[in-house]
Image (cartoon, rainbow, N blue to C red):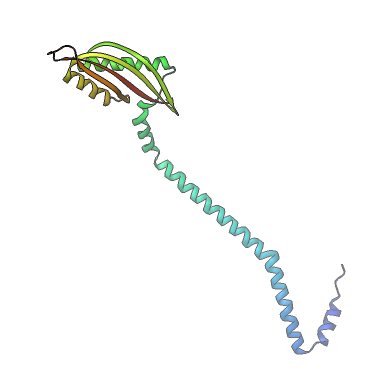
Length: 187
């Protein structure tokens, strides 16, 4: 592409009237400013705007991370508080043995006489496992009530599912109790 010589441009401008020259200069300045805007200013401006947007996103992410980091100690203490409820054993047999041992300890603590205790199976629901144990025991009503209270307030998530209490014999203050106890273990 050949550009016109400067002499021809001067010749063209000399033939224009004063008003036409002013309009020509205004149009040339407008075209030059528009070209400058589209070729230089707008790309720089849009790049700066996208950088500002990226910086805002990173700042938001950093604030979120800082919030999480600031709560780290609180989360660790919460985890430690509930760690006893998490299943740490390797097998179901170990879990059932630990449950039976816990129930034996509670019977001796409550001074009830344990007649029979056997596992009654497991139920799984989601990430939880529920171990069931059937018990037969004897004791006076106060001891049985104390035993049930100790089960419900155990740190091992024990719960009395069902129970049946009947007197051992007429006129006796000793009662027989059969119950099903469950333990929920979080996997």
